[in-house]
Length: 337
Image 1 (cartoon, rainbow, N blue to C red):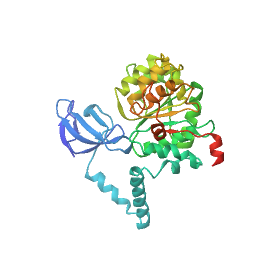
Image 2: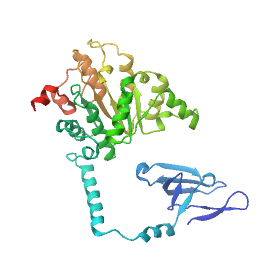
Image 3: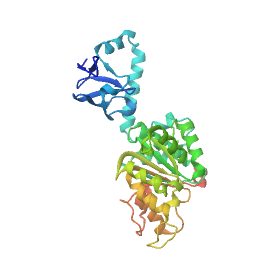
Image 4: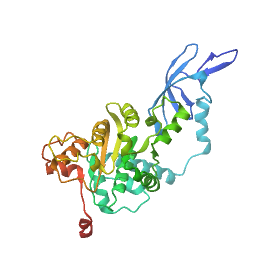
């Protein structure tokens, strides 16, 4: 149960020892080390599924509502009795199915957990995405074929496989409410719109120095704010040079392509912003119904932002490389199928 050490005054507070399971800040942690000083400092890692492995270091006597989970707590688990064999077998089969689908790229989970009717052609981007070690996919389907649904399927699948923890969706300002509603209604994913109002709210709650990008795992942001240093600066600070487990979804990605076809065309502000931000994400997903503006150099520059290992600005795009990471279907193609 830990060692009893004196706290302030004449009262005594139980201090955990390494290896104890504790409850602090409404989460369950495993104690790794205890610095026993005048104010003991406890270092622990989280055991909860939604924050597994996250580290925490607290001054134990200053925390409210702490609890050391001893043997008596674990004994209470068996007081409710045991499930039937059939019920437990269903649970075991569910775990086996989840383990298989988390490792086999040919098996999907997200289509069965989405609140939509998925058409067969909408699974093609998901199939290609899971075959890549890093998801660098360009979805260039025609208008009305469901690029948002296809992006939601990929994002949901990566979350289920624990390949992604944080998601940032960048889109035109008018598309923010639509993205938020569709992700929540169809995939159960809650996104927070990051704007001036949200930053003011965060600063009132946590203080002026807090980085707003660290306060929620999934954000929606408009293209206009990515060219503003007040928003892009904290984003780059949060991502650092590279942040594992992150996904960037860039809607209307053609806005990030240089408008000129010249070999050394000057990038626009949004092009420079995306070129700086995109490589910091582990996974990238670009969406656009009009990916090519008629200039080959502009198109190769856009693909370079998506995947700099396969494509280089000013170098002709090889069809073999493009087929591995781009999905392009027109409405006529779907009707024909």
